[in-house]
Length: 122
Image 1 (tube, one colour):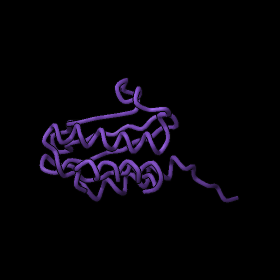
Image 2 (tube, rainbow, N blue to C red):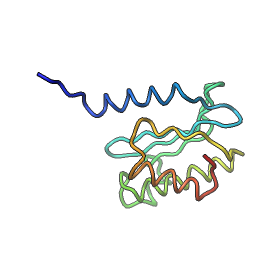
Image 3 (tube, rainbow, N blue to C red):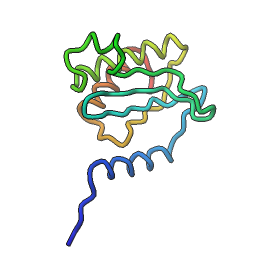
C-alpha cells in the first residue's frame, strides 16, 4: 500500500532544503514567514548572530485591531506592509525571503508583494 506524507511533513522538508541554500547575515538578514490556521508570523533574522532583529504577527494587538480576520490574504498583505515599515525603522532595506516551505501563492505572495511595495528589497 502506498502511504502519502502529510502536507506539514512535505512543507518541513521543503523548508530544510531552502534553508540549506541561504542564510541571513547582518548586511542582508532573512525574512522568515510562518503561518498557522489562525495567524501569520514574520521575523527578520540575522542567522550569523542568531538574533531576531524585527518581528510582526497577527497576534499582536496593534496589528490585530486593524484586521477583520487574521488568517486571510488581506491580513497577510497588511502584515507585509507592517514588517517592511518596522524593518526600515531598524535600518534594514535588503532581505532574503524565506517562504518557510510554503508555496509562493495566496497569503505568502500577498505578504511578499506588500513588503516589496513598502520598500523592502528581495
